[in-house]
Image (cartoon, rainbow, N blue to C red; front, side, top):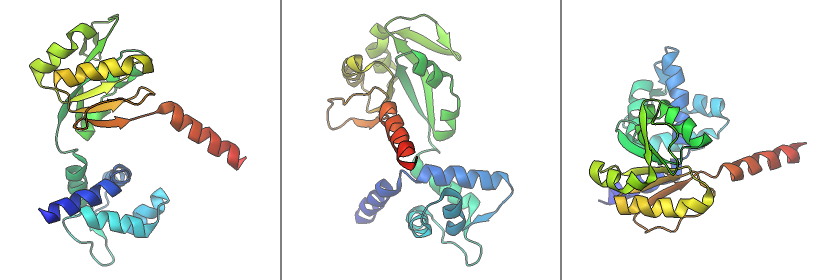
Length: 212
């Protein structure tokens, strides 16, 4: 139990960097490479090589080989396992506006173990988007209770986000990916990942002005 607890702590501290490693290593595999070193990954991503080495050591099931590095196939499998890419979870999206349309149409989430299977909105203008049903928000709770879907995606305006989140919780949602620019008040048992696009843009433009 202690080893598992330590591994989870290590994973939490490195999780934000692992997806970048995964994409970089996938590109190398597509190019025909069989081994990759922590130093090479660090150079490609402009990250401290010591940090990359520590991150990979915390998740890799096989040690790197001298002068060769880590075996790419093994490292990709380990990254998939830690990131959950080797599993598949269904999700629903609430808020079929401009952002919601993009998220529903994007098929790449499947490569990372996530499938958006349905959309919900207050005003249903289209019955399907990218082959996925778009349903009235009034049917959200019953749909979730019937399908046992565990992940919800919120792409509604800030003022509507809390009500949507509450409905998701009633329906049995256990994790929420929140794109609304607001903080949700939810039970501690609910996992929440906030994506504040406005804050990210502000950070980008501020850094751009600083450099200028």
